[in-house]
Amino acid sequence: MPAAPAVRSRGSRVALAVAALGLLAAAPARGAGELIGVAAGDDWTLPAWTAPAPDSGFFSEAADPPRFVHRRVVDLTWRQLKPTETTFSTTATDSVYGMPFASWDAQLAGTDPIWLRLWVSGTNWAPAWARTACGVTTVGVGYEGDPHLPIWNACLWEKAKALLREVLIERGLRAEPRLRLVYVPGAFTWCEFDFDIPGQAANAGLLTFGEFDSWFQGAMADLAAIADGENTDPSDDYAWKLVYTGEDYPWSPWGAQDDFLARDAVAAGLGIRTGITEVFNFHLSEIPAWGSTVAASGHVVTDESAGIFFRGRVRGTENECYDACGYSVPSNRLYYAIKMSNLKALQMRVSHLYVVPADSYLDAFPGLWSWVRHSLGHSAYTSADAWVALREAEDTYWYDDDSRTWQGKPWVKNLERWLLQRDLAGHVSRRGTEALTGVVAAENGTAYEGRRTHLANGQAALALFVDDRFLPRGRSFAVDLKVTFLDAGAGSFRVEYPVAGGTVLSDAVGFTGSGIWRTATLRLDAALWNGALAGGADLRLVATGSDLEARFVRLLKRAPDVVLFADGFENGSTSFWDPRLAP
Image (cartoon, rainbow, N blue to C red; front, side):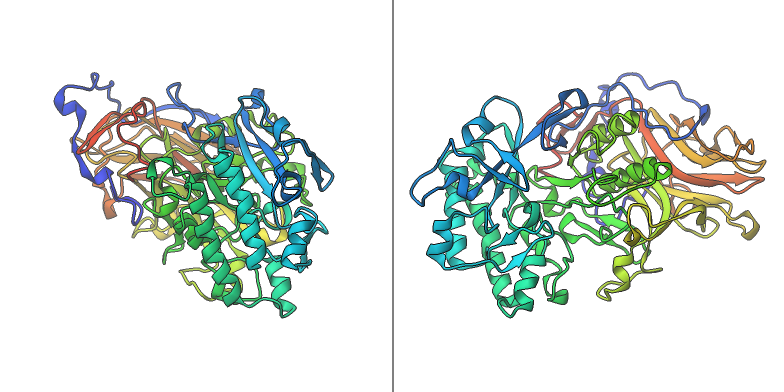
């Protein structure tokens, strides 16, 4: 049962199953691939034992507890807090983009969870005394018509650091348990660190890449040091609360020179965030800051031992721009767009998701959003499910960048989260029949949703591989398999899998020719997850009579697992071992 490349960490080092010590409850009744049922559409159900990951969830501008949006923003500008260089105001107010910002005292009142946005780089966000002292003026204008200062100016950055030092260290906000994340470095439109402003400065002959990079590397270290208290005591380090708001492969005049600056920010100790998973096919396949890369096969693989998974760092995104932010998704594509943007976020292992209840359509699709909320931040060890969205999508960004290559570039196969599909002899899949182009935005390209067998060419099955950390090798579990398939033709499909006595086929899931997407649930409690099928596969979806077209396959644990590792227990309820700290 092979895991994804570079992620076979702890699951392969299981010392003893607790069952061997008599510590597990009696094994569940064993079926031979019993068909539990078939229902129309998608199936987002989760078992009753599932809970959201402790360090995860929705955040937004305002809290909305009935919709499980618990973390609200604290917005403060530099000039609001520092009317003079030697004073700090807790009562001043301000506004940006027409949004009123209440005072420090007012925004920090209460006991509810918060996140922080410090607005620093804007010409109108910075205090006049800082502009005068450093002799700086506007070097670029953002897409909201907002003018910005050169935050990379040595004098200006020193004074901005003094603000951050006072907010985070002297006033103790870094250690405040209510505060979970801080957008940094507080620069450019909406505090999103796009490179349009540095690019404008560069095009005007005011900034070289060497100058920017020198500032950037030092600034990321400065931010981490301030959040860690600028001391040598690791017990009060909070750099993991900082969230770098730039991205991999940013747009700038500097070509490939700045491709990996986001990775450098993570290496300095910061978390990461993107703001545009709504455009789910574009520019988010090759994301080294997130530990993800496109393999030679065209599948995205994620190294969960990468730095972004350490010390509880935030992996964030925003999914609210469907009929906002200049986008307009047709009503007949709205569910698709919201579903795929969230699948992309979860494939990226997002832990914190920015939503706006109305714009994100939380009420319109409660089942999907509940599943997303219960999935955010989970690891292969704690997740209730592992899944693959079978598809092939065009990442149009890579038409213009030759720094990476893979089979079929710029097409990327599947969205995978601890359940993988790979083509093998006799299992070579082909694109699904549904093609969608330009959903959300033109740059989102074309996606072929689903993968199909090809009986006429002798390709009768889809091969699936389960990450060893989700289902450790050679054991059986209380597991259901859910397969979302196109009900077309007059045939059927079965699931083949290893059991103690060899291999077996599940009950048949028959096609009725309805032409709709349906989800079949099969019980695989007798399965042994030992990679004993052809090519090391754990499961085969075998078509008979008519080709199988599947678009989503999900393995679901009906009960939490309890495993004894060489260095402790992991049962979802103990802090003795935390996979975020020791992947």
